[in-house]
Image 1: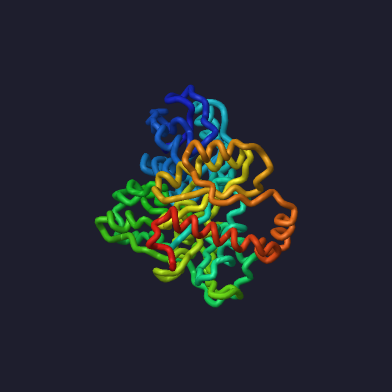
Image 2: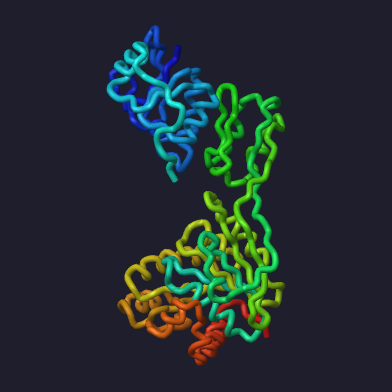
Length: 119
Length: 287
């Protein structure tokens, strides 16, 4: 299964970036092989509006089924939900530990956004 | 002749000038409140509203049976109002600026337009001789202001008549929408550091639009002389000064016009209009 995780760097030792739409990178990790595919989110980071929407579309394009992040806003959540991607919020620590905790079943999936939209 | 009244800083007296100028002209006039996020001109002119119309903007609707998920609509949208995922498309009407780009670029004709209501435009007459009135009201939760302003402006007076446009404060899209295609801009400021700071931004904006303009200094006597120095430096004509005066503030607080309490102001506002006619394209002025 492919897991998308927002990250401050490009490998498994990087910290989870608490922001979704404006994360530095989004790592798409294969939960079995731990292969990492890097989405450089630089363009969205400085987006005028709709960063979460674009990031969600990118995660969907990579075929991820799960997203682990800190905060996910309403427009991003709506897009992820439409793409059938499950979201676990309030995730912190390194990307590697997040993957391990996910595999151990420690996260619960959200049914709604956990932060306000930004205007 | 279309005159817009703008300021940069809020609360400098745009509505006071619009209402008193309108009521001082002995000619047919249409006065339009384009501060559609918080219109207040009606408090001074007491219009009788005779018609209401909705402001409608097109937003995209995607036919998923036709869509091939090529993402051209998502890529053309500057405002990220369309998300194409692996197996569906999500639209965000509140982010859409109704440019129509997605409809045009879709190779499968899968994008159609549906209607979204942004607000209301109200029109009517003021119980003063020959005065028509219009105002826009943005719906709560909506952020697309310029289409509402443009629809208010469509109710301007016929060619030879005078139209006064009460613009919103600031220097962003709504103000541009209000000032655009007007024949003259009155900039109302107060002689304070805050008033001057925002006046400078407003002057830069008007000069970009290349519209003749002049200054009214409201609450003259308070603050300092920096606004006067700036006006002189920038060749900005001071058309009128309204003093920092308790009686004027009291009239405002009751929703009264200055001219109904101090008769001599009617002549001062008539002189203001003559100066504007001199500075603007004189052919636009009613005889």
